[in-house]
Image (cartoon, rainbow, N blue to C red; front, side, top):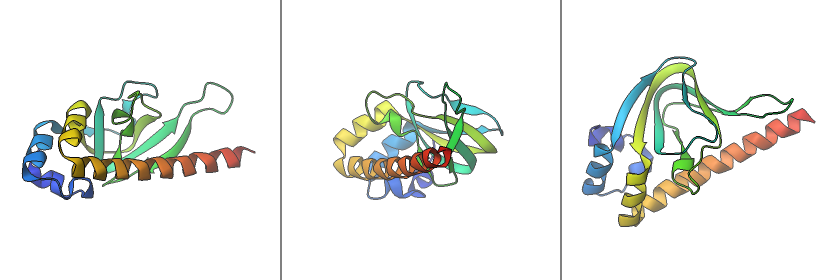
Length: 149
């Protein structure tokens, strides 16, 4: 469990009621990782939502052909990721590998989905953030593809 004050540092939770913040805090934890650690693999089930507290994480697209693995985005403190845990079929689109050691806020996604159903303001804010992440990653992926041609 994390403190409500930790959650208040991030805009994703702005406007959430104190009760909702408490509920999120109860299903959240902070974990530390070393450089090179893999948080999750592409195609893994998405069961957690994350916010980088410190360090850097590469989001890596894994290709099974001659292209090889490609980092399509590097996340830093304050970035939310793990959007696949909020969008069916809840399957990871990338591999998350720590580029620099750091800490991450880990949030139980099934519980957050329940909270979003109960608190539409929270649901709207989180889904808007997820849409922004998806747009940024799509642009990054398109730039990677353009560089290949």
